[in-house]
Image (cartoon, rainbow, N blue to C red):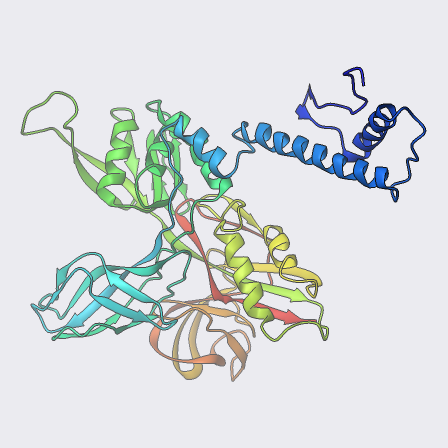
Length: 477
């Protein structure tokens, strides 16, 4: 051979590195081999020389593909794995590790009994939670403390499900959680890591909404955040929160309040008003002052939980396995939390049911998906006052909407997955309804969520979305 080759080579085009497909490489390899042997070789692939040409083509094609992967990983928009970690190091960022679900629980017992760090409690799903905030049972016989799941990841802790003392401490008699836990996370996905890297660039600025968002997202244990402002001269209402004129609004899920407040303080412009439900006093120790340091009230919003429910309809067939519901639930939770590598449900965004489709279809070839519909506590089918005794829900007053069979019932101390199984004396309004799970709940405000109502849900600017496994139902059609 003269040193030239008929094998096509990669080149840099308008879209970057482009490699020829193996269908174009093979004729070039065959031409080179034919020239090397003086011509006349039989090009049939079943011949020895044909087999050799096929093998060489695969080797060349694999080499081109590996280099293509390398060049694609240089672009932050497409980088994955170790290459993405390397790009992030330029910005002094590291991929966020997995975090456990965190929940505020009420410990009850004898006044004065200390609940130490490391005290253990057990949830109904057999998850063990460890106390991360030592405290002492007060004069009223209770104390609210923070507990974290001993297993990292998006494990739901619905209302009233952390209900057993696992480690005996004399005088500590009971535990419960009046609010759902803040769901943990798996190791940060490729999509979320890239979004945070992009936000970190804005973090270097001061005074802009994006700079404040980048700083808050960088706070340890913050799961999500949303930042906006009211630049008008009049108050506005955003997801139920009133923003005064010319004010800053920050909503955050997770993280220590003092750390969040400091992040806001270091990036906000002086003199602006702030909106939210939480105020933390921050000392300015960075401006060359000596004690006593100047102090400032930093106000922000702690995200409330927005409960999602969903119904999956698939075609019934003999191939549908007995554990179909469990498999589909796991796939949908993975998509909702971004554990599948895609975008996750976030504060102040729209969540589309179609985001679940790839995850559900990937569960198995037996999935013939018809549709996925959702409901949310921010758009309930009905709001009412009711009480529960056993499996009977008694509705004494209806504020709005109507109840229906299949509705998920949401309210204080009501665990996930409680649904209306059939009508009793009520057919949408006051009366009795039969539930799928027994409970004992006194008269209180409740919501009825309908999973058949929407293919997209608006997530409020003051809410962090939550989807529990028990709130996903499967219908075989």
